[in-house]
Length: 128
Picture 1 (tube, rainbow, N blue to C red):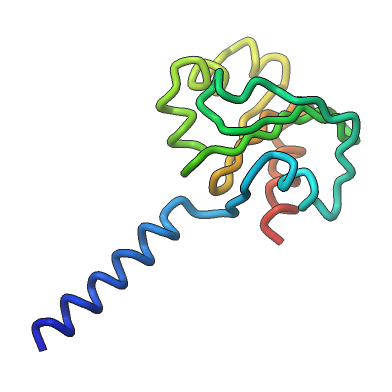
Picture 2 (tube, one colour):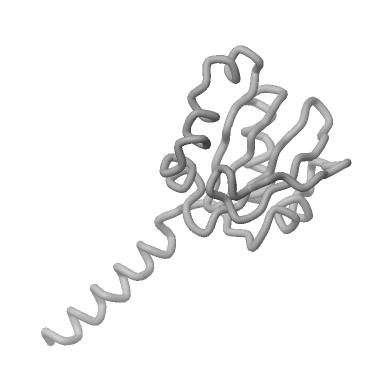
């Protein structure tokens, strides 16, 4: 009985760790761009993702603004918070005044120019 309990707890812990990052998981930024249903991201260019601790990045135009799409090896918000340059991007007063916001889901971070509502709508589209 003791071993069954340990096995069940181990499985539960594994599930919690796997799901702990929450949200969606993508292999790369192009996979994220391809996954949008309600938004048409266009004129995408490659971004230097390693500068912010990400493994891939694209900058694209979208109706209502623009978006930079980054994927991380794990949880995007934690990955960004572990990188000094990325952390500055998320807390900069200049970015907020320019209506630029970071939004996160799973291993995806979006830097959205066009307002927090656009960012939230983009994340919601990915999660559907």
